[in-house]
Image 1 (tube, rainbow, N blue to C red):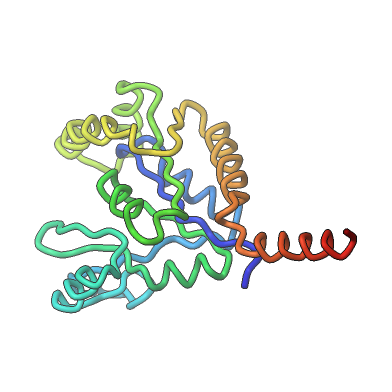
Image 2 (cartoon, rainbow, N blue to C red; image 1 turned 45 degrees about the horizontal axis):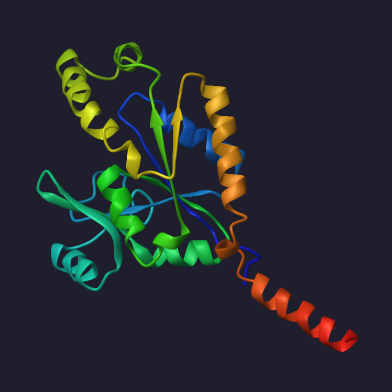
Length: 213
């Protein structure tokens, strides 16, 4: 058994707050950090591989896994199901590696309420201001004006659920926010529940104490 169990690290934010950039920086900081691969009922697109981009499933199989509690979180989006299979996550954290999730507040609640929820660490990323959030969406040049407007309308609904999270960071400086994330993760890895060998060590200490008494 590994010296520690991995964490289920949940990052959420409105679009444009810097979540994807921060997630990529975390993976560069710790190459053992694994990004959660979702399951989906949609058909594979050209170049996609099962187990790399997604776990591709039939709708019946997906529903069965939900019924059996083998989906940590799931949602129905544009006619297809998406979710996070528990099996691969369970294997990964038992090997001592953390798993990174990019889900919204609804996914955070589902993961928190799952049987692996006690190993979850949830962090919400806030923008410094709504004006700055819109500026970031506009300057990255990925979306049309109409899409940006839709993202902005959705952003407040996402922000309004910040209170569900363990930690909330205002991303007004990318380097400082990354450093705070590293600090949080490093500390949370040391939680008692994340160290499966502690109980055996305490028993050894007790035996030594009894021998000396």
